[in-house]
Image 1 (cartoon, rainbow, N blue to C red):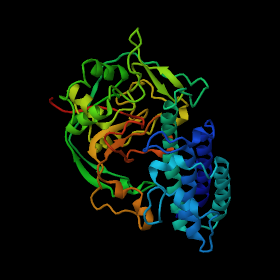
Image 2: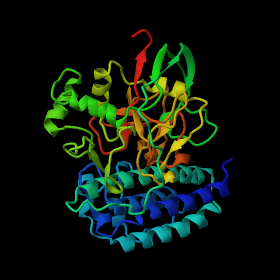
Image 3: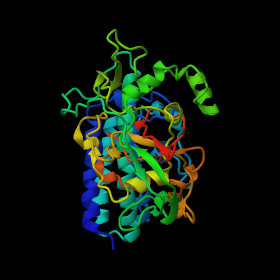
Image 4: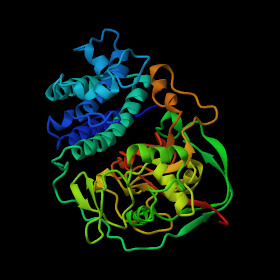
Length: 418
């Protein structure tokens, strides 16, 4: 049986954390949609509320009435089975309801959810638990979307103005390789706690002998790729990647300034505004295409998601997460395999596909993950903007290969004997 009190406590904690993340944003900031892939902070606040009203409250009480039925359309993301939706690319047009009305809605739903959870059945409890993990995904999206929105302003306002906690100061260290033998491993979630449906079912997988980079690829290392003309020739690129470079005019990771300073240092825009890049911190905001091209240029490759999980199994979920307050990747701390969790989401060479015998959730919630298993690549490990408790070795994130606005980076792998 599910832990009723534990779920109620988690619900309250997650909902409060979302509002704390939104607090530094003005009402004007919270309405900006700087590109079709991003959403305004106000929409995130409303959509996560819509989720609980739509999938818990309205389904637990047949007499349930929405305060405004139109909001069911405005804040439905992609659930065709629920009904019509407002166009994703036009979420920035929603000047109404106001931000104050959205916060008032959150308070009403929270009050009703706490009452509902006191008597909820197992289905409602399980859906609430799913909803809290769903909201944690939107917490990270709120930060990455806000970063893009603030960078898109000619004033370049920072999200956070307080001094960050002291980050690890990295010294240049050669990239070490850690070898792993042939192994048959159990892949996927073991069912002992919450997991998304795309992490199941658990199954056996054969992983061949390989080596993995002991740390993530750094800003300095990626800078060497740029300086060697990495964006000027098609050689290391996949065909679609080279087309994306040309179509988008890519010259480096998203948010990097166009040219280095006279002293050779580079700056990048972050949640604390423009900052000097730590050359030993992990490179961030690169697409799968860039990660793959860099790996080829470096004489290596990206790990498969099964290789990544083979390394992660049994290791603690420890690293630089949103709770650190840094809001940016930091240099490696050392160890046999470092930065496996946190700092940046790590692109893998694996397409986002269903596991053998995968079955989506029943009803409209079955649209949560399964229908996106086409044209996307798997990422692992979480980032500096992820909540620590949200992650685990079996967690599968996914984005289109050209996406750059998430906190995405690179870990290398290679076949033994290269």
